[in-house]
Amino acid sequence: MKLGILMFATDYALRPDELACACEERGFESVWFPEHTHIPASRRSPWPVGGELPRDYWHTYDLFVSLMAAAAATRTIKLGSGICLVIERDPIVLAKEVASVDRLSGGRVLFGSNRTGGLESYRANEVG
Image 1 (spheres, rainbow, N blue to C red):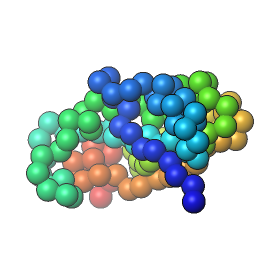
Image 2: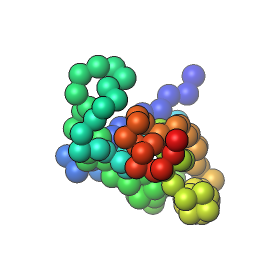
Image 3: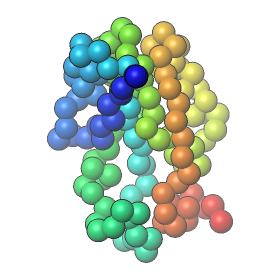
Image 4: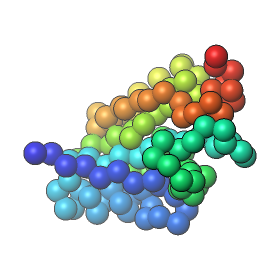
């Protein structure tokens, strides 16, 4: 069995490079970071698990900066996008970011994507 760790990389959490090193030292297969770029000032769509949206969403570092920090500090651990919100990104820039981190990390990127989160994000991106 292969195990990985996912963490919201924020200004009050362990740094992505420090987490990746700790995970690599302990034999984990991968480290994953999520992406949340569009956080609305007010929400009409509920958070899927109920309650208020956790503060981590407002403080999340950029996905590819986090992945590159982790890559630069490690040698073998795989680097995953817990989710990449493809619809919120320019496809050419996204392809270049993924390919750059993958190349600079020695081919260690695991790319995971998801749809955008909620009506507010769709509207911010002029979808639907």
